[in-house]
Every structure is written in structure tokens, then in C-alpha cells.
Length: 472
Image (cartoon, rainbow, N blue to C red; front, side, top):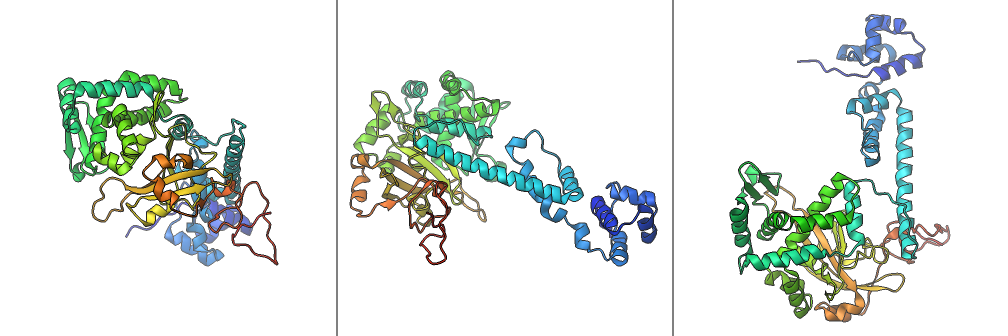
């Protein structure tokens, strides 16, 4: 059996210095040469099992101390250097391990500073939201990643791209798909660009939803995708070819600051264009108004998924032909925000969407069910919210389904124009929600997870409130 080798030079050096020994004295006690011990301390030679046993017997050294990773400092340092702010300074694992081993206290100090920085960044973001709600704009931002830049730009503006909408309607009219949009798109791709579309089994494309092979001119789609999602991939491919100039013009108007942000933005615009092809603006707006924005009816009429129809409802902002100003929020089980969008810009300062009382969080307990309710914010603003879970690509046996939840919302004053209005009006009590716990000053909230940023904690030994975070 090959013996295990451990590189632990800095830890051996700390043991030697802690005992006040020279390299010569320790080497003699271990039965090795001083030069070999010097190589061990510089991590140029490993600690063998025999040397570990000698260190334990001669100096009573805890073997766990020699075999550990700097008491977890290395793992915590990896968290620090994974931050996008340090993207140009990322060391290799060996370098991180050397720092953690050579100076564990300094490493833990770096971790504490980093976590303090993250906490302050979160607080500044919360303060920015408070100032924005009061009408004071600020440039303070915690955005670092290109995806954050893209999301921020798209959330703040109306979810409407006029050039793409006009071009999409013209293209669909020329295409004349009738009742078979997927077939018409496949035929167009083949006839106009020589691209053949084919669905592949999971084992042939286990980790991809789509792949375009430039050499064979074939577009491969995964069988994991639902028929609706396959149609969206076909429509996105066609849109990038037929609507390329319109997509590019809208992309230029967004003025992203990096090539990576532009790439992500182009993907989002292609997705938007795909929905515009699947649900042409004029026809969809007319159907939505007649159906009183019943998402289930719309998904059936246009042969799309609930998620696709819900997304499309938030885009009805054409000047002179606008629908109700819906906004959309998508979360996963852990509360991570995947998407925000709005007909007139997502109302983050007023609505937020991160309150645990909202139906979007309850939807996970009732998969596939539509939950309609009225949510009232601390300032008295009220919203109609419609929540439902959606499932991701088909999972194989033994895989966990990717399930997220959507919330579609609009101001409660407009609820009467929707099919969901009567259900909300018949409910006597509104959900008393907030934007987010750190920004909400609602007292006695059983769901509060954090104290408000704007109030000091008011803990009293004689009185305990309903919330774990009572405040003054």
C-alpha cells in the first residue's frame, strides 16, 4: 500500500518555534537531516506517516493539527476570493492553503473583514432602496457581476422593446404558421438557412437544453424540454436570424459596460423575441383583454406554458395599445430572486417581493395551484398578486425537479379588470406584507426574519413581543 503524504510545512514550523527548537535539534530528534527538515518546512517534501508518528511520540503533537486545513481558514478564504470584486486576484487552491497554514490568524482576520464588507454592502443596498422609495436617487450599488448589471437594467425599465415587437409581428405574418408554429419555424430555418432541428435523448445531451452545430447546420434540442420550451428555443433561434438588427438596436440602447453583460443581454432579448413570435403583440393583447387576463386561458389559446403566458402579460406596454401594468417576480425554494420584470419597471422600492407572507412563498406547499390575494404594504399601497409554481426541465428518475414560483402582480385598484378580482374582493382580510424584513417597520409580525434597518432593537427583560426582533 502506498503511504499517505501530507504537506504541512508551516504547521511543523509553528510546532518547532513554539517549542523553541532549532532545525538542527528537531531534525536530530526525528532522525532526519536538518536540510530535509528545511525542505519539509518549505513544503518541498511531504510528511510521511513515519514522521507523523515520530512527531506525535517525541513532541506530543496532535495529529489532527498536522493534517487539518488551517482550522477551516482555507475553506473560508475560498469564499473571500470567490467574490467578483477579487476576480483578477484569484489564487490557486495551493496558494490559499499555504496562506491559511502559514498565518491562520491573519487568514481569519481577512475573512472577518470580508464578511464585514459584505454586511455593509447589504446595508448600503437597503439604504439605497429606502432613499429611492422617498424619491432620492443614489449611485450606491453592490453590483459586481455582469448578470447583476443586466438584471438591474432590465428591472428598472419597462419590459417592452418596440422594435422587436414590430418586427416579430411582421415576421409571423410572412411566416403564416397557422396552427403549427413549431413546424413553420422548422421549415423556415431549413429553407432559409439550411438549419435542421432535431430533438436528442437525455443520454446524448445530458447537460444542455440546446446546442447549435455550425458544421453540420443542425439545432439540437433536449428531450428534457417540454413541447412549449422546445418551441421557445426554435423561436429564439429564428428570432436571432430574422430579427438580428432589431435585437442589436435594442441591445445598444441598454448600454451595457462589458462584453459579458452584452452577451447575457442578447440572450435575454432573444428570449423576449421568442415570446413575441409565439404570442404576437396585437393578437395577445386582444385575447388578454377579452379573457380578463386569465393566464390559464391564454396559455391554452396560444399553446404556451403558464410561465410563458405570464411573462408575456408583463410586456403589454406599447404606446397607444397598452394592457394592464403587470409585474413579475420569480423565486426558488431558498428565496433566491431569479427574475424581476415589470410592464412599467419592477416596483422594487414599493413592493419588493421578499416578504415571507406573500403567496409566492406559500405556493411551494401547493404545487400547480393558483393563489390570488391582496397584499397591503406598510404605506397603504395594495396589490393584486397571483402566484403559482412552475417546473423546470423534465427530471430523470432519481433527480430532483427544479421548481420555482412566479408572482404576477398589479395595483389592487385594477383587480376588477381581471378574472382574479372577485376572488380577492371576497377575502375580508388583506395580507399585511412588506417590501422586505430589513425595510419593513410593521410591528408584531410573526413572520419577521430580521430587524428593520431603520429602528434600534428594543429588547426588554420584562416584556417580550410576538416577534423575535422587537424594535423601538
